[in-house]
Amino acid sequence: MSETLTALPEELAHWRAQFPILADSTYLVSHSMGAAPLGARAALETYWNEWAAQGPEAWECWLPRIAEIADGVGAIIGAPAGTCFLGPNVSVLQAAVATCLDFRGERNEVVYEALQFPSLTYVWREWERYGAVSRVVESSDGRTIPTERIAGAITKKTAIAVLSHAYYVSGAIADVRAIQRHCRDVGALLCVDAYQTTGVYPYDVTNWDLDLVTGGSHKWLCGGAGCGWIYLRPSLLERFRPAVTGWMAHARPFAFEAAPIVHAPSMYRFGHGTPTIPGYMVAQPGHAIVATIGVARIRERNVALTQRIAAMARERGLRVNSPLEPQRRTGWIGIDFDGSEQACRRLIERRVFVDHRPGCGIRVGPHFYTTDGEIDEFFRVLDTVR
Image 1 (tube, rainbow, N blue to C red):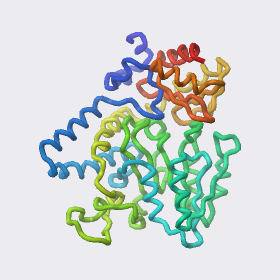
Image 2: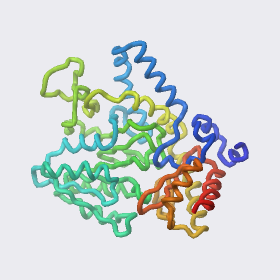
Image 3: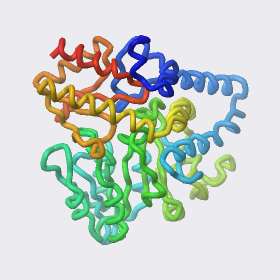
Image 4: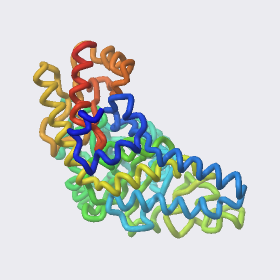
């Protein structure tokens, strides 16, 4: 292990000890599930200790912690304090966004790409029951969509466009800033799904003047499942009154007032029923590590490693289904060949953690804790199983 670590910059090698799975595996799947930091276990123990010691009075520390954790995400993406909130996942949060819109008028279209993550297409297609008209922007190659094609689909009839910052089938980056400017020109809202980029690809919601951004914690943020998040441009807050709601979205939740709800004046209005406090708390240590290292530094390291992965794949004659130019992709490389799905299973059996997606192949995602030697090990094992 010490020989392998010499290829990892000293300031990053320091963090490896915080991720136990790295000691006995080759972990190249952070694009799907980031490695679990030791701090996550401590957070779960803190939750249990607070629950065990304080019973229902633990809510006094848990509820303010939601905003604290949300602001921690905000610090990573350039969001001012109080403009982010948490939810169990992005599907629920985007469904809540949908309830804030009125599809009964002429501006009733929802635009999203054919390469959008399927869960979100399920959410938005269901709003056709309530008057929404879906406009799906097709891809010619199954991996990318031209910016002009997306912009051309967003018109004065568009209520909201839902855009992936990076496509889960290729890692290709969409030109979010150009689409946001176009949306502003035609009066449409833009909701960006940044699950594939947050923590590995720098962006700033304030500098980019974004309307809405959603994401989660279990990929590059190393936060585990159960902690989705949403950012809302401050000037839009009063306009958004989610109907996916519950007592925790009330301005006075412990007053237990009967309906109709009085929405909280803050981002707490995106709450609903009793929140999943353990999922939120377990995510915070991963967020903190990413914030401490800095996404710019993580990106620098990731680009070096993904360039190496792409080059070594092409040396073997394998198809690379991610853009070769670093500025056009997020933090992983898709490698495909005949039998890639079976090879992926064999790699995992040997504790070389990657994943496979139809139309993409094996997705290989190094993070700040990945060594050069682990890239070599991936290809050494791949050569024996394909």
